[in-house]
Amino acid sequence: MANNRTCFLICPIGDEGSEIRKNSDDLLELIIAPSLERYNFEVIRADKIPKPSTITTDIIQLVQNSDLCIIDLTGSNPNVFYECGRRHETGKPFIQLIKKGDKLPFDVSSIRTIEYDLSSPRTTRESTVVIQKFVEEIINSGFQAKSSGVSLSSVADTLERIERRLNSISYEKSLSSTNEDADPSEKIKLQLRPIEYFIKAFEKGDANGAREALLRMHELNLDPIDLVIASARLAEAGDKDAFEILNKVLTISASKLDLRTWVGFTYLIRRAYLDQGKGKECYDLINPSLQVFIADDKVSVMEKAILINDISVLQSSFGDHENALNNAKKVIELDNSNLIYYYNLALIYQDLNLMDKCVEQLDVYTNGEGTADLPSYILTYAIGVYFRHNRPQDTKRVYNILKKKDAGEARRALNTIDGLQAIL
Image 1 (cartoon, helix red, strand yellow):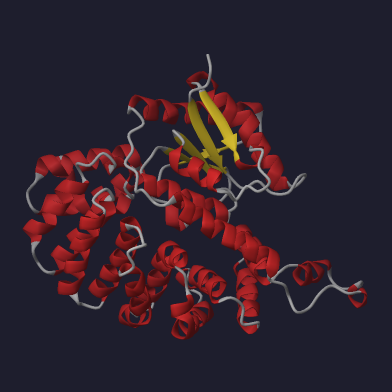
Image 2: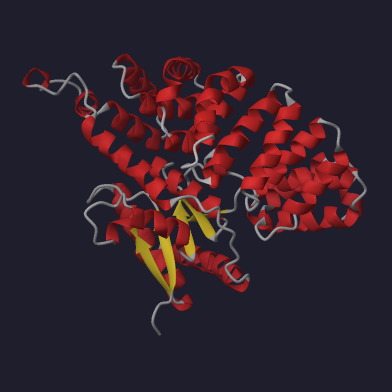
């Protein structure tokens, strides 16, 4: 029977002959392909597409339009996380994997993730069986989806811009004959471009290396877009020097950032500031630039919704709840398909002590088609509010969704919400 379903494998690929490539090939050939063979899927990986560059609109179309995406988070590869985030936005089915022994990043720790093991034929087979159970669950659900409608060409342009920058930015220093006796690791640093070295260090979880690359980028006064993206990632992770660089770059160059950078990275920027208790400072820095794009008729309604939502979250953080509320309502007018926007609106109603309105938003996002795909903390929040407002049936309903999605988080909910056990 001919294949009529598409599965796009999002994973770190690495150079030919590298350990990353070997693991990627083994995962594809020994686990993914055997897992999906019986379900009539065509499995596609970026490097298997006959294109001169893997950073194309075709790749993003696969991320957003494939029937299924399987995402290997092993190694915390930034490109994998970028494509992972884009897949999450669509609401379409995905399965997350990570190699046994690798640490699951905090950002996605609330999402069910399969730990695969290629160490022996038996563990490889066991990994295949677990994936098949997930696939059967997705097939039985009818591949339910709710797309965000993000512009494919816009995302592709972003990736192409990053690729061009990786090929054009260079260190002022270069490896010369006088460095023949230098430490091999120092030679590698000298050969790499700062942004490239940052990405490689970030992939390996080398915080010191990533920090060193960021400081070098700042010293060379490189492109503010790269500086914002790199500093925001480290600042959000708690690096104080990275936060100072981010703050300085935004103070000087916020108006120079393009739409794609704001749409893709404002959430990281605001999280970095909110962790420092500086939501108002962040709002004052970025709001003028965001308003320019919000007023632009050429910007899509989905992109405007993302930007206005970031503004609303910041306003709420420093107590400007009325304006936060107005903006949160505008967001849903622009994009009523993203259930997280209803969660954000619920939080604002709670801050305003309008709990009936808060519960109304819970009713929307816990009864939507994409409810099971929401982060676990959002479901836990709904359970707590329903429980405190004497809605036992809804409490049980959402708890059962959470338990099926994330048993560990469900147990934590039982331990932290006094009296919950009695009604379940």
